[in-house]
Length: 307
Ligand code: CP
Ligand code: NVA
Image (cartoon, rainbow, N blue to C red; front, side, top):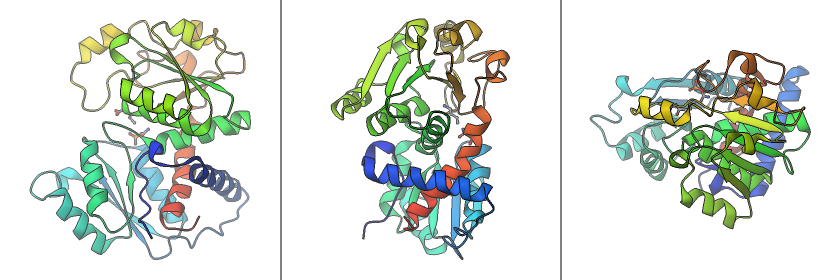
């Protein structure tokens, strides 16, 4: 049987994603009700978490998720390892596969993720690359479903840097979870033609605008992210390009009155979003952060072949 890697949303069919998502909702509910019968899924198993970039949420939520499944986790920063410096990705993959049962990687280069998965003999999970952030969007879709029942048929609007990793995973998700994705971003920070074309070929509805007000109008969910992601050096250029794309109260007023505001965090408050919006009644950013742990518990269970 093929190893169950969790690399990107575009690599999955709807059926598998729906199964993992349903389990995530059940696991969250069960934990709240004090039901811990999932505690043996990862019994005696170890997750290695490799970080080439900083992390708060991914690091802690994966660690906690693994413990709640009965296993444990080891966090390794690339500065502490030979990985990325003195040892090939392939050799790291082969060695770690002899020690641990599952690996999560946060990397500067998507190619490293693919190479790690290619040579590992245990499941590999994408914990963010320069291309994508599927675990984040899995938790985000879960959060939208909690608020609206289902995401299918809803409209999600991304405002800001639509060329980044988080935005790319939203485009992938639009093709798999049947919601409309609108983008409000400057021309030079739109998602790549390749990813948009893939999603449209898969049946997604993606509407692209350079006008954030037009993109937000009547939308159910407004999402943004930092203007300067980890690894971006062109700070001044990005701020200049994105200065009219801040999510503030006047932009939120154009959305549906029931609209929610989402951000994967960490946020650069006062830049891509104002305090009034991120701390306001429409913001669900901390539910979203919490859902990383529930969603990843379900992803880990799927990778460990318990779904
Ligand atoms: N959203 C997210 O992945 O946060 P961290 O960078 O803190 O892991
Ligand atoms: N786009 C951001 C996401 C951080 C979770 C980054 O890559 O820095």
